[in-house]
Image 1: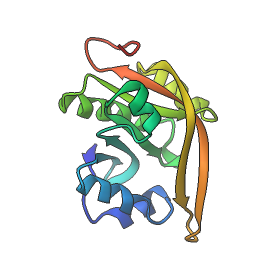
Image 2: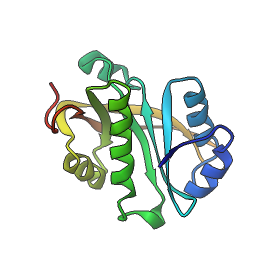
Image 3: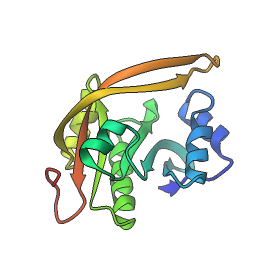
Image 4: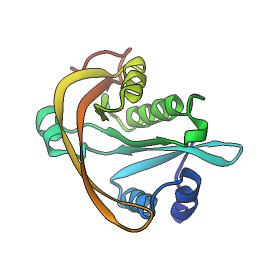
Length: 167
C-alpha cells in the first residue's frame, strides 16, 4: 500500500482500466491537499485504489453529519476482486484518517452495490439513516461526458476503541 505519486495518472488509468481523466482529477485533488489517494500493489502492479477526502463531497452529508474524512472512489481491478485488496484499502484509509486525527470516517454506498455494502458493514461501518441521490459527472473512454445519479446510503465507522454506530 502506498500513496499515489504525481505524474502516474496515465499508468493508473491503464492499470485500473479507468476512463481517461479520472486519475488526473484524483491526483490534482491530492496535489491541492483535498485528499490522499492510496494504491494497492501486488508485485509492483497496481491492483486497487482508494481516496480519503478531507471532508465529505456532498453538502447533504456535511449538513447532517458535519465534517469528517470520507472514503471514496474505491476501485479494485476486476481480475483481483475477492483477494482482500478492498479490505486492505479500506483498513489503510481508516488508519490514515485516524493518523490525521479523525475519530470517525464515512462513505456513501450505492443501493445497487450490495456487495460493497456487505464489505463495509463487515468492516465496522454502521448505517446513519442518511440516504440521498449522489449526482456526479464522468467521462467515458471516448471522451463523452455523462451526468449520472446514484441512490446511496451513508455509513460511518468509529475510529476510536472498537467499531460501532456513529456518535
